[in-house]
Length: 149
Image (tube, rainbow, N blue to C red; front, side, top):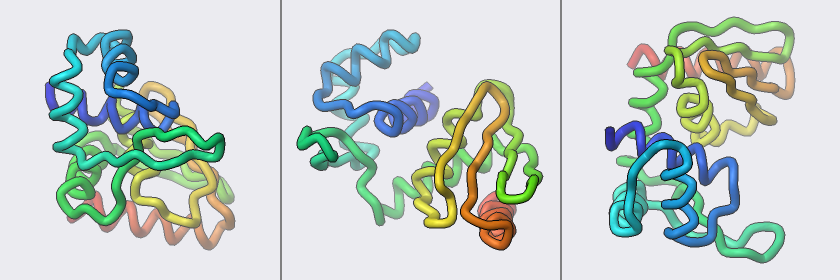
């Protein structure tokens, strides 16, 4: 339950500019997670989230890069949800366990590969826009290395 909630938090802060714990709690409740502000506060601390100023000048939650424990959580989500991948020119299509595509996409996004321009996730499929065909091969190799340990 906690791993799923943490994955959902990462997904939500990647999708929305969330400014407060209350706002995050409301979104989680809307997504079916029955949480209180205190639970969200603990989750933020465990995930080592930080507030940054976005382009509009608002303070919003983001993943604090460079935290080994947090990076490991992303890696675990990627490993647990990943099924396969294939490329079509500079588009990488990743297949996941049903219902895990958004969490896996958030994990891949958090890896912050400069080759990845953006991602779109459905229920069990992710499409990654990659800068070039060569970059696509590089990203595939990196993902394969993570998944295989």
